[in-house]
Image (tube, rainbow, N blue to C red):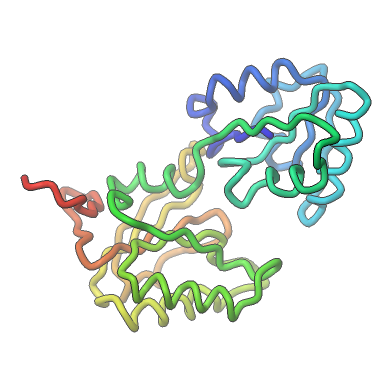
Length: 235
């Protein structure tokens, strides 16, 4: 299980590069494979589209059981909304599985914004394909009540236009409208865009499935164009 990070090869871990080099077979979602085309030339490639995660995992296990070294690649970290869980569930003890971590969207976006994750934070996906929307709303409510910095993954898609609006409304129950919000699109992918706004005005900005949204806590502030959530050190 190999984490590719956000897409910039400079941010790909040496251990991930080595795992790809040593592998006979590379399995992954086609968009992620495009990020590493030059690294996988000459290898057997198994590619498929969205919602084929179980198929990809099973094919990877089948190849591994044949004695081949297989790299299942995920963007970000394979253990954060990635493929690691399903592969481990299906593989059991039939093959050896190693998870190679990668920089995930939360930390990539945070680095672009400054230091918004210096204190406790919650990462919540707004995709309800695999998680009931009522459960997602419960988690938003709990994160707002707990004054967490909140990182929103999968905030908006063609089929989910209003989830981000609901999430904002729920967070406004517990957060000041002037709470800083960072909106990062294509974090560390070469076409990165960064906007710092407020909870009040965040919906005026472009938000889609390539966007990570970070909503500050009650202590988060903006200094010199950067979001900072103080850890509590005296300065």
